[in-house]
Image 1: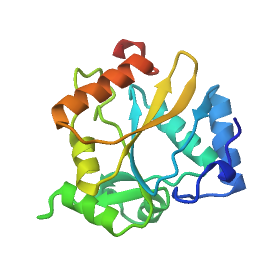
Image 2: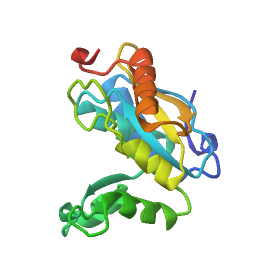
Image 3: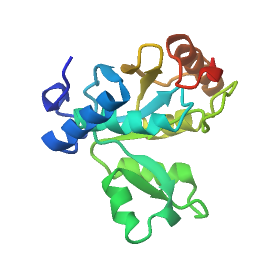
Length: 197
């Protein structure tokens, strides 16, 4: 399936143009990967990508999202937003987070979501590139706080595919739901580094 703006619904936040989509396509092609699946037409979502096992995941994510013109954001410590890089980080979707603020990270993210009409936030539930027995639960707590669904994006290293998989609406017990999501990802996907299985 070819991806361009006609495959991105009117509610999905967009960025870029034909040139940036071409660059995204070339990144994936140079790495020998392809993008499959579909984007849901929702204004707000938390993207969780996994398994996150390699620094190459960043290039796959950026190439994939550029190739379809999806604007997604990610959190970064506020101290990294210094001149001249601060403008670049924001243009690429970076959200400056004050880790020492009286307002906790959850409240900062909720305020950011509330102030935005359409926004997708990308998170890696592992919080590391090493094998983990359980995901951290911050992504679920954020999704519930901002009342946004999760959108699972899988890394299928066996077939060299980035899979735009499915929406997952958090509603149950956080610990049980966290375990169910990890089982789903582990069952369907395999990261670039083989030691995560």
